[in-house]
Length: 365
Image (cartoon, rainbow, N blue to C red):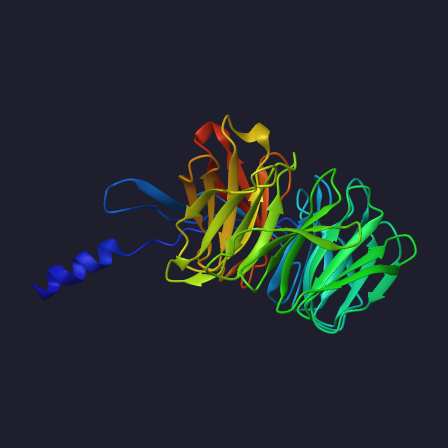
């Protein structure tokens, strides 16, 4: 019996099979995994199975935020206090920027431009130009605590910043001057985004509330019904008609995303439940991707999920095992997502609409 047991154990051991093709800094890896099933037999998630490209890391520490500057370049920041512009299609660093004294918390890009803003725990905001020098174009100081929100107006003339000091500041981008200031008690800002073609700014808060601000005078225009958990992130659809927010949580309590109507009723439309830890980021996916509107979420449970926006059904789950908490999610192009993580830098994910919106990891950097 002992001999038979040893033979069985030996036969079931996984045979290592790793293909290394060294091309400069590029290494092509082959990973093995299987589908996971729920007890009812429905396929729920897929771990990476195909070859993907593992580029040299853009950061040496956990990545806090990633944003798409254009269809080729993303900008990321993290605990290494560095802002990195990266071409995810070639796997090369375009520019590495250092100026902040503490962790980078948020990045906001100016549409159709080479310019972007970074915020930090050092309470400052810096403006950069990808085609400019290694020094910031501007440094904005006005908050008393860590800056946790950045939003650029649709016409790129104004920047709104938010902080854990309960304040929002409105800046003139050209002059770098603060033109408006507003404060709400216990309104610890977690995220900001500007509504397309409108003078409104959407804001998520640790007080479990989503607020809509009117930039004309920086007044609260609307408060959505208070949720049960801290709101960690918010995003507005391209048409400006809807927005989504997501919640913190633990062991499935909370951990959801919520779709809201930004038009007349401003009611809750749908909820998306399925993550087991804090949902850190949520995005609307391009309408060209599928026949139905879809959204994506990333969470501290190392999972990225794609959802049917209308029904709340989870269409696909990708588990990025070993990545640790997923901190930020951004749309790269019509089929690509960028996902920041604690332990494995930035992941490049590809959505395959021909395979039922299958999501797979194609590169890390």
